[in-house]
Image (tube, rainbow over all chains, first blue to last red; front, side, top):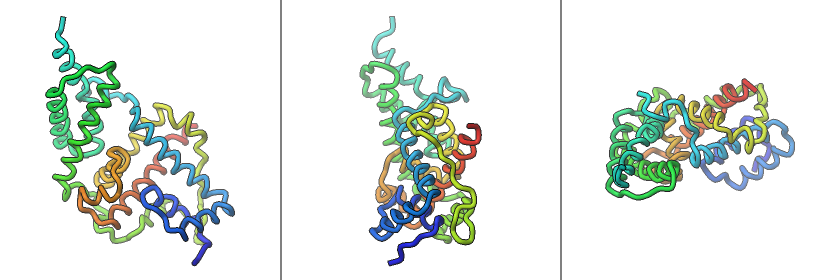
Length: 72
Length: 195
């Protein structure tokens, strides 16, 4: 089992886990990578922020010009 | 004085543009979107009921709309995932192209570190941010945008999406992967650029 991952590989896993469960090995490798890397945790927080933002958007979409009285 | 039934009808009719916005965003086809919204309004009018406020009514209507939109996606499955002009065959597998746009050095490190987006509870929950988010979704290529919103608006699991539109797991994950990276890039450019 290869535990060291580059940032590029870690970023791919961080995106992938939004849509599929990672293997145990991938999860372990990612956790290990986060301990050593300052950049990838920032990228991971962006993905978390996007997930949270979509939850808010679903619950309470903002009013937009053109989303009001028919703008066509 | 208008009757309760007439009031309900006019409230539902007022929501038309609002519903159309989501139908268009999800379906990327004006004719399909118009059909779904019309069906939604007809279904709503057949079940008149009282709502405390506009947002409750809208939530109820959006619930109906989501079912109509899902039916339309299922009926048009073949067209839904066609036509982005690249990656239709899933030939390059892993979303590597967008990862390259993120720019990594040969040793796999980031060239430009992703920015700290700050406190999601505050800035990222604002209506302004959500408008940027929606605009970024709108800019995704059609097939990518449809599949992505099946996940994030219809809240379907990846298995459900595969059942609905008959896409392979590989193609689905490639589209979702690309969509997420493009959105990240769009948000970083259009939201963080001005803070």
